[in-house]
Length: 135
Image (cartoon, rainbow, N blue to C red; front, side, top):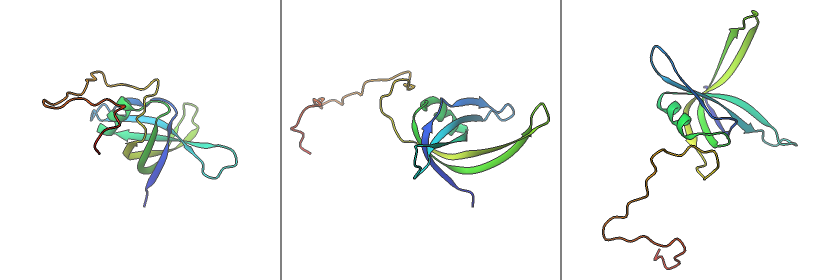
């Protein structure tokens, strides 16, 4: 069984690219995951790869510092550098990405067309400081 669950913060904004033959979206980013029970605060930096609609949503809504949960699998690989040296890689291929914080932070990507909520006919807006809400 190859199953990974991680919670951490993005170290930078996701990078999006498309596979030329299939035009599938691929997003990659690094997640800083705190090590439990460490005497000093330390983290592991894990490369995450997401595909398809998940990749597009990650690129659109995630930014550096955002807290996310990842469920996926580990995949290893290797490649040769231009000098002939073999490099080994370990990535987590995300099957599921959960956005865990949505607070207003500086530097977040806001949807381009934000609209104020429409109040249905026969209703009125409540003041946020109204303590007389019946529920």
